[in-house]
Amino acid sequence: MGRLGFGTVLALLVIWSARGTGADPGLLADPAARERTSRFLSGFLHPNLSGSYLAEVANAMLSTFQISIVALVIGIVIAIPLTPFAASNLLVTRTPGLPRWRRAVGALPYQVARNVLNLLRAVPELIWALVFVTAVGLGPFAGALAIGVHAGGLLGKLWAEQIEAVDEGPVEAIRLLGVGRFGLIGLGAWPLARQNILSLTLYQWECNLRAATVVGFVGAGGIGQQLDVSIRLFAYSETATLMLALLVMVFLADSASTLVRRTVR
Image (cartoon, rainbow, N blue to C red; front, side):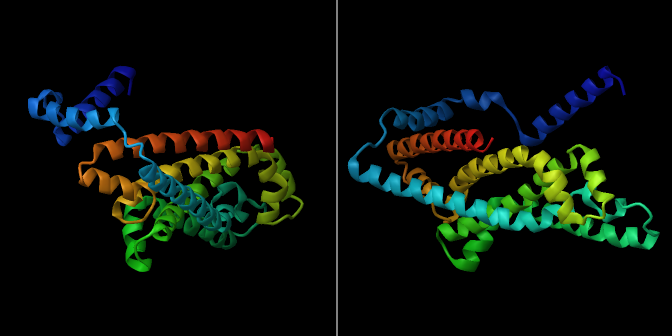
């Protein structure tokens, strides 16, 4: 397929998707829509900065940070045992001289690990939150579990891909010495991939912060729960304050991630 054919297919895909979603820019120009949007945005010009409400927002921010950190730990705990089996360059099937049946059996852990990681990340955090809210009740712990399980699937996949992307030379040389799967990681893959793995882990923490806001809308705690209440009550000045708090959180998370990367280089 040439460039013209590819461009045609892409254009048709966009048109098909626009029709399917009912995309109509004219709806944004509707007078009623403009009035509702104007009323919503006007609240952002007058955020609620009273001391009592700022104290509530600060508590919600702390809860959101705590959710993101606990979720990251849960995700790491899930990803660590699955990653060695999800990286194709660590398969025992690559060992020279293995019989065919041994290669087939050796590939099974790879398939199982990949499918488990696919399942964990295929289910959105919001759905996991509904599951864990039912299991452990409303509150931040349900949010941490929901985000952590999803993060485990993502981290396992991303870490495995980083391990697969390392230079094959050192890994193969260590394999020829008879070193097992975990030795291949510790001696060969980890020293080459650790910087990228660290960056991806820190980025996942930033994603956890944003996800912690979303799961709050189903009662999983954090600043999202406050946002849900303020929007339902049409308290747009409070919504503005919460949105500003979210911006502060993202800025702090980005600064902390940068500091950690510089420290561990």
